[in-house]
Image 1 (cartoon, one colour):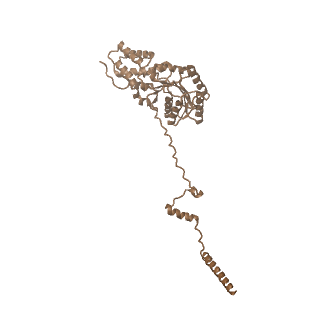
Image 2 (cartoon, one colour):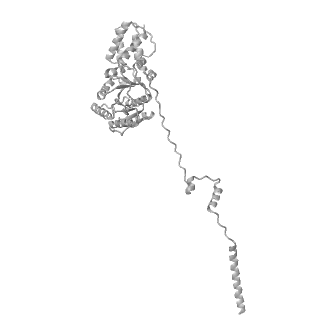
Image 3 (cartoon, one colour):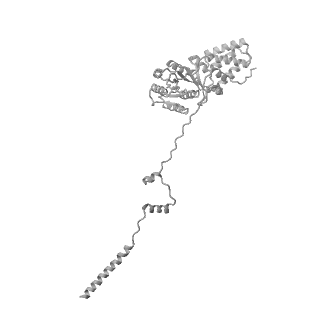
Length: 397
């Protein structure tokens, strides 16, 4: 019996000792506290990625990588052109009249400087003036006065004959006419200029050039695109205005022209500009329709105040035919001045005389080229001097 107890006790002790041998080593090995996650991550990133990269502020705040927005460069401001002064512009552009100079300077002075001024010579002089579109009535008056003065004064030298011819041509242009443009505001209302003329005469381009003339002379200008039947006309006018910093008021295509003109003048009052320049339509298919349209524009605009100038644009290359078209406009609106364009492209510089003679309206501006500043205030004496030129002429044998 004792033997069984001893064996059982020995087995129990062996089991206890075996269990202790398994537990004690585990109790001795305490696990180390884990490193902070950020520390482990940082070390790993440093080992793999090299030197640290500075994070954006938004990254530190949210933990989300946000790319910085792309840098967008502001568009460059448009360059505002400064038109050259109009004073003396006609003198600077005199070379553009070379074709007309051949008729007046070389042609007429060559005839007048002949040793004998007989009937045949005077007829040739008349033909030259008529060919230059001076007009029959004006030509006869000029030739009759020249014949009388050369006979009475006994003038024979080229310089003296040139002086006499220049005086007669200037007289035919009537230098007493008022050629100034009324562009000054009155009582808080800007001066209003209507620009009329047939399409194809360069009306909208000329309107833009007139704006440059006014700005060159110190006026602030607003443009009204009342030629609403041609979308290109409004775009073109806006381009011209943008070059010199002038605002353009326009409406949708085929809008009421009178409404656009009214809005342009109202905007001019609100912005306190000196002058509002209104480009109008130039259709001539129906005279009654044209009269109604321009008449309405005039009536609506005059709700703000009277129209100061109505400028008629004529193409000098159309000659006498252009005068018939011009007469339609003079019957519709009170035209106060003529803008004669494309004088550089014709030998018929005498059209200036014919325009004033037939229409009874002064030429106030002349176009002598395609450049933006090739529109000049008209001065009769300077114009005639440019027509006659300064080249010495040899007398015929």
